[in-house]
Length: 424
Image (cartoon, rainbow, N blue to C red):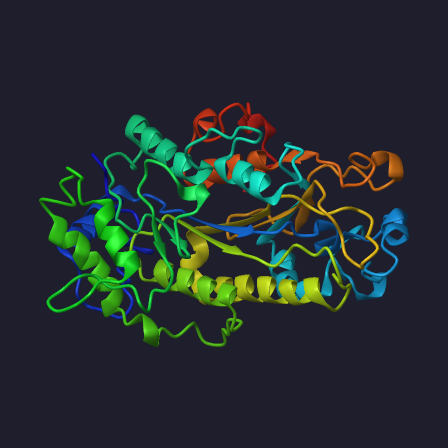
């Protein structure tokens, strides 16, 4: 039987429901149970940079002499880099990230990625989202398995998470469909736009997302969705009652007027509405810079401005409610160390990941740096891999979701807590 999570309806001892005083009955029961349990209520936000971001121009190893030799037209000049630690620096378009790094809330893992050597976008994304590099027959995604592992751990540990219930908003994606990352036995929903998400009512036609939401549980024998089915749709109506179209971010917060900026604003809105979101996913495209990539300015710079500005706005918008939120970014692979003949970069290997959160040990670039000398490059052309991305995600899901069984989450990876980078 599916369980609905009770841990998200109490923040620091006070009920917080955006825009409405109406509380569905099962949420009221959840609040009371949460008050007794005192569980931490961690939430995880995952962002996929589709197209293979150029990690070497995102987090620049500016002390590497070969970096400038290999990128005569697209390298970021040292005097324009946002220095991090005397060796690495951020692309100037990531200025919104610098305060988060300096405050110790943003960590970076460089020379990180999938051990699979595929240079196919489709295969590499599939492997990264399934969490099983090189295996094409995996049916579910790593984040769905992490939620399942959390349930197993909760049932076994008797540590306050036992018997907690989950709302229908537990796992969601901002987009047209549930991504590979969230595919699996734990129900997940996709919401293209919270402003148009609706449920069936008298004389009303549900949105496609709401119809899919209802169909997901149509044949379920679960007591929440049958014996108490009306209460489930009260939760959806609660979202509508919050009047999403009138949502106002925190004072001084301005999201970029882009698809990604809008998605991050909606994730913040859903988290702040305390609807029981535990895992949220969205993606951002436009990283496949084969031609005219640009350096300080240009194609990549514009994408980075949107990327960092949207995430930084999201973090400021959450305010105190971000204390139990961790955000992680990833891309299917990096790009070649050398620029190509058209002012761009081709498909590479290792990359950089960002991890943001109040509990993150930020202000540091993690991972073993492999170097950029010609003999240090992967296949003579790419940044070599020194940290498996699953090691980063394994630590994140263990520390945030309590998904202790890493073999369940990342089968075959042979992860252990002893190998954690200790960034969370």
